[in-house]
Every structure is written in C-alpha cells, then in structure tokens.
Image 1 (cartoon, rainbow, N blue to C red):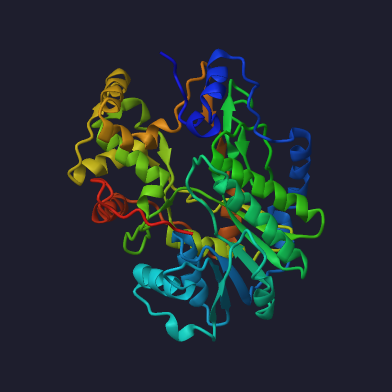
Image 2: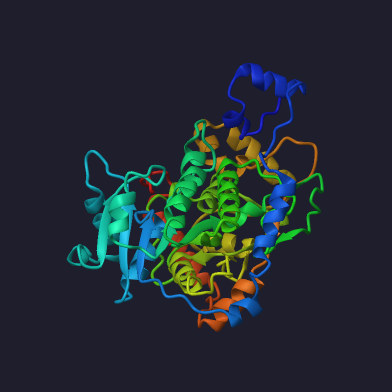
Length: 434
C-alpha cells in the first residue's frame, strides 16, 4: 500500500532508509544547493545582454578540443567544424579495449554522414585518447594549442544507482576548468534548459522563468542528470570570478536532423522519444495535454546555433539555443496516427486507467518509464519551470541564424526514423554514446 517514487529506487538505496522515508522519520533530502551563494552567481551574468553583445568583439575559434564527439550532438558539431576550412579539431575520446578511439570516431561519423573523414586525420582532425574526468591527456592536448574547448561529454541517462552521472557531468567539467584556466582557453559547456528545475508547493512561484541572466531561481532539482548539469554550471560561473572564459549552451529537446530525419542511434536514451513510446504502449493520450507546447530542436540546427554563438564576446556567457517555434502535443499525436500508430484521445480518468492497466503487464510497464520516472507521490503541486530565450534569439538573428518552423512533414519524418531504428517495437540498438 505504500507509494514509492521512481527516483527513490536510486537515491534511497536500502530498505531501512526507504522505510524511514515512508514513515516520515528520514531527514529531508537536500538538493545540495547553497541558495545565498548560488544567487550571487547571477551577478556574473549581469553583462550577458544585448547591449554588451553589440559593443563587444567577435571571436573566431581556430583550434578546438572537442569532447563527446561520438555522441549525437558531438558528431554534428564535429561535422560543422570540419566544414570550416580554417578550423582544426582535436577529439578527446575514451580508448576501448576492442576498438581504438580513432576507429570508433570514424565509424560513427560515417554512420551519421556517410563521409570518410580519414583523409583529414593528422592535418585538421586529431584524436587524443583520454577520459574527461582524468588529466593524463593534458600534455598531448597542449601540443595542439587549442584556443577553445567544447564539452559535449556527458552521461545522458537521468537515473543511476552509482555516481557515474555526477562523476562525468560535474567532475569532468571541473577537470576541464583546470585545463582552460592555465592558458586562458575558452570553455564552452553544453548544458540543458532543464536546470530551470521545478516549483514544489508553489516555491518558487510556478510562473517563475529562467532567463539567460540567471542560474539560481529557487528551483528544486531531484533528477540526477539535471542536478549534475546544474552543479557543472555553478562550477563554471564560480570559476569566472577567477578568470575563466566560458560559455554555457543550455539546449532543449534535441530531435531528428532537419535535412533528412536522421536520429540518434541510441534513441532509447532520449527522454522525449521514450515519452512518445509510452503513450503508444498505453494506447491513448489525454485531452488535457493536447495544447501543451513542444519545442523540437533539430540537431543540425542546434550544432550550427552553438558554433554561431561561440563567436560572441567573452561577457556573453549563457545562451538558450532552443527552437523558438513550438508544436501542440496533440498535433504530434495526430502525426503518430497518420503513421499508423493507434493513439486515440481520451479523458484523463480513462488515461489513468490505461496507465494502471499497462503497469500490470511486465513488458508494457518497462516501456512506461518514459512517463512514470517523473511522476511524484508528493501531496503537493510539482510543476516544471519554463525558460526564456529572447536574448539568444536576438543574438542569433543578428549573426544571421534563424530556426525553421516545425511542420507535420518533419514530425512524420522523425517518427519514421524512430520506426526504422526499431524503437517503437523494442528491437532497436541500445548503443552507449559518449
């Protein structure tokens, strides 16, 4: 008869502690934030505005150290960088026992782009074996004299029973800060708009919005992945006070490539794709959510936006490269139905009943984690806080970049890509990306 939150399975790791929490005798959990100190960090972003952008000098990276190049976004950033004839790229990648880092990179780039980048090795493309959480690669990287470090390395799963999420996402950035501070290198961090966190019990007020000029807005964060990204941002902005040059790119819902619908090979790690699969497994979608806006950010556009924003003056430190065009969730469901997926609209009580019925089926219950992982048993209102990106849009427009509207054709192309990957029927690959 007890109700246990999904996150408890990872954060409350013994039966004794779980019993204490359920009985109310456990100490309240802490996000680990220091509100007073974190609020002070907002002052670091005081010059992160349009007047300072207009008055500042443009930057032009020449040699980039890129981490996470075999990941979905990382591969597209590498592709964009190599399209620029005046840019050299060093890729920091883990060395695996059965395959070299170089072979793995070339294979992943061929998978996404059908281009053989081997001829560029040793001239404009270099591979440095190493782990972002260690410093054994520092000496080799120094030989290439990178002026910019672009960090895409991340553990992207949202829950873990170990410390791997925090070790890589927060520990890795501390290591990169050390590397960049020694020679004034620019450190560009790929973060997430989800650091806006939640309003719990109307604290902060549900209409509070995170802008590019804020980090701490009184938000609550229990999700391990988001917490690690928040911690990384906190470390970066703290280091700015000690001379670090950095930029933080808070991305949103990374979606299929606009050019051809190609999606990430490890689609099972994408939270939005898992949500779509959960509605398909439940066999219905609630009327109450049909007008909820969804922002698709095609990965090729995001990569281009990030590299465009890297040109901004040093005082421009945080951006939200998120597509400004949204789509009602109901339209996405209609596209699913156009693709032959049976997802009728139902009233909320019928949807709840369908979820409970699916939970009793072991195979279906596994697929429902895309919805249930973010459910909470608290008897208080929990609402995800929203973000603004007007400043980012103004800057991008002035730099010649604009987002394309999302069409039904794009959504159906995205859904077809997921079908091709065997995502909806559970036959697709579960490749680990870095």
